[in-house]
Structures are given as C-alpha cells and as structure tokens.
Image 1 (cartoon, rainbow, N blue to C red):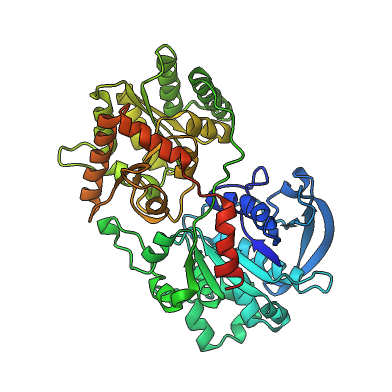
Image 2: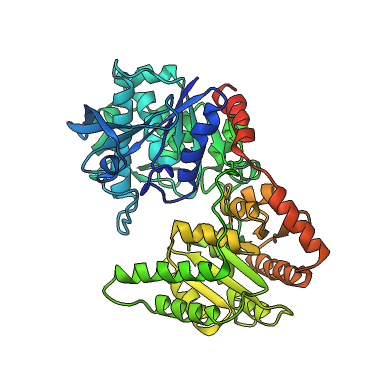
Length: 513
C-alpha cells in the first residue's frame, strides 16, 4: 500500500514545524513502513527550504490557478528509508508556513494553500506520477484537494484513491469568501464556481457565514473517513462549543461530524520512545535557558523587559540549590493552552498568581518554569507575574533543545488546556518520568489518569475548572515525595503510546476500513 500525506508542516525538516501536526508527519511514515505501508509526504517549500534541506529539483508543473497557469517547482528530498520520499513544491507565494492577517483573516494562507492543493492535484494527475492508494489530508490547509477532486473533471482520476482527513485543530478552519475578494474561491478556481452545484455548495460553505467557503468543513464532508486525534476528542467535537462554560467542541462543525457517524474515527497520536535526549544537569538547564534568551535578545534592537526579568530570575536560581519540586510547562501562549491560568478568582487574583502563592507556601522548595510564546497579551500578563514571584521563571520564546531539556529535567508537568485534541507535551513529559497535572479533556483524558499516573481536574464551568486545577496542584504538593508519588512517577514513566500500536488502527480504521 502507498499513502500520500499532504500537509503544511513536517518536523523531519528544519524550519518546517510549528505545532503537533509536524511531529505526526515526521513520525508516522517510518512507523507505517514497519507495517509494509509506504507513506510519502508532499508539502510546500517555504522560501529556500527545499534547497537548504538538500532536495533535488525534479520538474516544473504548470498549474491552472486564478485564471492563469502558475509555474510550481517540484523537488524531492532523499529519505533514510529508500522506499519513502518527501516531495516539496515551491512557488513565490510559499514564503513562510503561516501568516497573520488581522484585517482579512486567512487571506494570505488560504491563497497559498489553495495553490498548493491545486499543484498537488496537478502533480498526481501527471502520467509520470503513480497514484497512491490513499490520499491523507491534514487539517484545512490540504482540504482544497478534496474539493478539486470532487468538482473539476481534470482531477477526476483522484477519485480512484481513498481519501482520509486528519483534524489536528478544529478551531482553525481557514474560512474565506466565496467571491468578490482576491482571496476567494471564485478568484482561485473560477471554472469551479461556474459549475458549482447547489448540493456541493451546501457541503462546503460555512454554516455561520453562507457566503464563505469553509475548507475544513469541505474536507469533513468530502473525505471517505475523518480522523480525530484521540477517542475522547472524537466524542467532544460532536457537541457544540460552550466557551462561556469552558467547553470547546465542534466549533460549528458538530452537525457535520454527527452526520458522518462511524466515518469519524478517534485514534491517538503516537510518541517516539526511542529518541531520548541525554538529560542535562540542573545547572546546564539554567545555562541553556540563559543562552537561548541571549540569542533572542541579539536578534532585536531593543531589550524586552520579559527577557531581562527572566535573566534576573536565572541568576538568582543559579545561586541556589535545585528546588525540591520543579513544576514545568511548555506550550504556545494561547487561550487553548492557558485560558484557565488567566481566570480571575473571587479574591481578585488570577489562577496563575494563586498557584505561585501555593508553591511559595508549600512545605518544600517548589518553583514553576514556563516556556512558551504566542499571544502578546498573555505574555504581558505572565511577565507581570514573573516580576512579582521569585519562584516563577517565565521564558517568552521557544527553543527545541531547551524544550527537550525542560521535559527531561522537571518533576511535574502542568497542562491546563481548555481543549486538547491529542497533546504531545504530556506524553513527552511522562516519557521523562514527570507526573502530569492535566485537564480531563480530549487526548489528556485518554493518557493522564488521576491517581494512577498523574493528577486530573475537570469542572462544569470556568470557575469550577479553575478551583479544581488549584486543588489538584495542592494535592500534588501534599503527596510529593511520598510512596504514592513514587508510584505515580513510575506509572507515568512506564506508560506507552508508541506509534507501532497506533498505526495498526490507521490501517484497520482509516486506510482499509
């Protein structure tokens, strides 16, 4: 069997990773190859990415797009597994992975991925390109392939292929206007709009904005199977979101997912338990953090106060023994990840400030190290806490080597996500023997079991979730160092969610089912 993974990111290539999708695209092909399935990857080449990664030029493709023929270059990257290949498509529009379009959301990215998808279809329908057995789409970025396969005669050969869609982040759907905009379905594929049937239009337009195309909804309705990256999240996305209560479900797509019934499958992502980095010492961890901050500062004309605060805390921590309990957290600064830490309690303090006070008054020396970047408003809130609490080191940025060191060196890991389709951070932390405190949603519910290998919390609304989070942390502080703590730590370290067990589900439920 041959599968083609169509994705915007790839963790196997330096500079091509933003989130968890990249880890899947990196780790899934070798795991499938062990099951005699060749999984090729096709992705955009951002800027000079193909040349920098050592890919070899293959040929030019002339792609019908926006009423003209666009020249897209095809590159091939050699793989350690000779059977498997990574293909990269380059075009001047493919400058970086994601853009921020504040006034016209998704305008740049949607045009980029609409062209990328058309180029994928053009490549596959070339007589020189053998068709795969399965086309595997990943998130909204590749869902235009499903629409092109369904609606344009020149791509009908792709209907011979089974098509599956993996949803990594249902909250991001890529919605754009149907017409009257340079970044719209009419602008990208004018002949498609001219022949669009009412039935097809009803499957691809946004439910809340019927004058817009919703690429993710199109993929959900047109794919043969829909894969959600954990069993619990597959249940959650069939329910409407209630953000005022802290519940995030189908984000407007729940009716489509309900209608698909058994065609929606929940399979956890895997974790690689072979490639472990050598654990550094505590002084080395702090030095790596200082070095990373200095590198970021060197790239800016002005010094950020958040970096200066972090360096001050690092100097203080370097003069002190390692804390008895090092609580860690690694993740993007978004409301998905840290909304609960931002909640204000009845006493006027935030959950984060209250947690830091808990650590400060605990029987042991307990500190929090948080590594992450993202929303500047959230970063400003955390910066203010970092200036106030000496037991809080907030590093506003991301460095892969530093991230791995944090995973390997912490004692406990905090993951308060309001929703989590699967989550890789808790798996990496548990792999290193960290005991997780995790919200019982999505993939966290399927991997962190309260009282067995970690601590959990839930709640009917944001206030209750916030209180239970603090209670779970208080229980952790109470039990730290006890016999039960040792049992939790061992169970976390022994837990296995490896790719070899997950790919059998891919074969039976997605590719063949």
